[in-house]
Amino acid sequence: MPPKCTRNNENLVFNNIDTSAPPPKRTRRVLVKLSPQELQAEQARLVAEQKQNEAQRTKELQSEVNAKANQQQSARVSRMLGAHGGEILALMHQRCPDVMRVWAVNSVSDMVAREGKVLAEFLRPSHGEDVSEILGRWSLDRIQTRAQDIAPTLCKLLEQGGFNESLTSTRRNHGLVFTTILCMLAQSHTEHSNEFQTMMCIYLLACGASHSMFEVLHHTRITSSYTKAVYCLKKMGTEHLNKIEALVKVHLFMIVWDNLNIAFRVSEQRKDSKDHFDNGTTATLIPLIDIPNGHLSLYFLPPRLTRLPIINFGPQDLLPSLEQFADNIKAPPVVLSIPVHQTEQYPLPAMHIDESSIDGALEVIDSIVRKTLKMSSEDIQKHGIIMCAGDQLTVSLLDKATASRHDDSDLFDNVGSWTHPQLGLFHVKLAATRMVINEFSGTANSKSPWSLWRVNSLLGRKAISAGWKVKKLPPFRPSWDLILALALPANILDTFRLTKEMPPAFEDPPDGSNQEVLESKIDLGCPTVLELDDLTLDDEEYIPDLDQEDLQFITQEMIDVLSKYDR
Image (cartoon, rainbow, N blue to C red; front, side, top):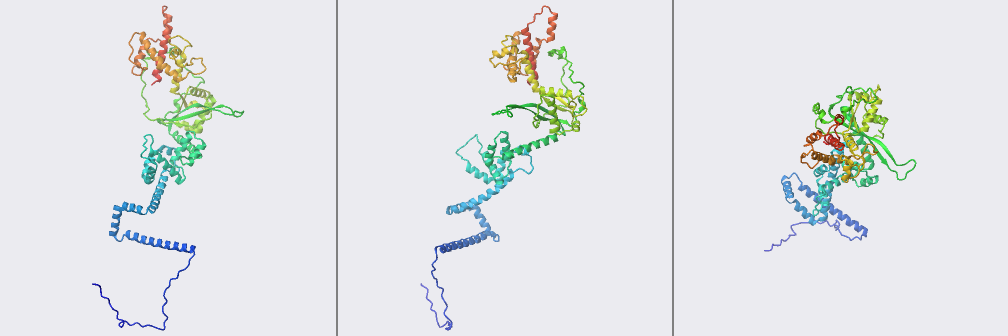
């Protein structure tokens, strides 16, 4: 039923009308003609006003959503976003992809910027930190593990953007590639070299990279500049020397040095620029473990009273056999045995000094002890004996220098009062091998069964120039193999064949298991030079077999070399 229409009773309402007042004016809209520029400005104003109103309404909505006064409403919003936040964002990306893309890029950019700053601070070395410590702790695996914790977003972006799951390679670790890129980005973030660039510049400098290669790799943030590489190398050398100077104050040490010859080739030779050799000397310092400073006092060294050494050498020292000393040789006593440890060695700066003379040897000692280690006479007195090791030439020159300065009153000038020469075992091994091959090489085309030249030619090996009168020393490794790996097993088997005894079962050269058995059997038929002389003088019917005796001599010599130096 339609509602009833109400009727207004005009008599109930009284309106007083002032006829003297002018009637009110009505607002009239007038169309204004605008120019194109004015119309464009007006449209821009309206759009900006609309965006401002929308932003104001969005801000009011956010303030209502995030209002903490109403805890129930805030809890409902949090649960909704936690349960359906991903769906809401997906829906927003579906409806407004451009807006969501811009929002995502801005959000991720802020996160990546913060992570990049933290990563750069992590890779940047501490102020005043030693280069040796940086290189000692550097590890790409450590950086990779730490980067996953402090920059997860950046690592995830690099992994998604640079890894192809369809291409699997077992020879390449993609994680190390991404870690290298992170180190490059960290250097670009702060413009300061980090651990990665410091390590790479030292590595490239050690590999002999050119200056132009340094410049190219420096622009790609892979390494530091060539100037920084040289600076780090000099700084590392200074740190190394400071450590050595502190070490020699509290530990006994040994010095090993040898000469170094470097050939310089000039493509366009002139009078002042020709091909030449530069002679230098390199040295190494080795600390002696568990020996306190001053334990080897200088009083332990006997004074040098003569220039030439006095050596008591008689006929009984010619080729002694084990039978002569079997009862007198006892096991050495164990006194202050050196514990098992890892030997440390510290290379010293190279010296442009030729040590092949007495003056050169003295200059080398002065450069090492006084200039490099900065030791005075008082420091030497507190330290004690300094062991000096090297090859035969080094020991011989040190002995001659000691003889020439044996009557000097100054402690530092009298080098024999605080140095003790020690021949290197490796050089003794070289000398023993060359002595054997020089003594028993024989002449060319020799038919003697003991001739090493004959054995070498029968095996079809490259000829070895050996003998006491040759100008060039025989090569060590071919001589060592010829003596111990070829001639010695053959002579031992031939000795067992002559004595009609079955040899021990072995196919390789004799080892330590049957070493004593072989030595005892060979010694039974190997008289000394003195014994042969006695046989020749006393027994008139004795007919010497020179080939057999020489074969026994060389076999005994080779067994001595094997037992002493091949351990």
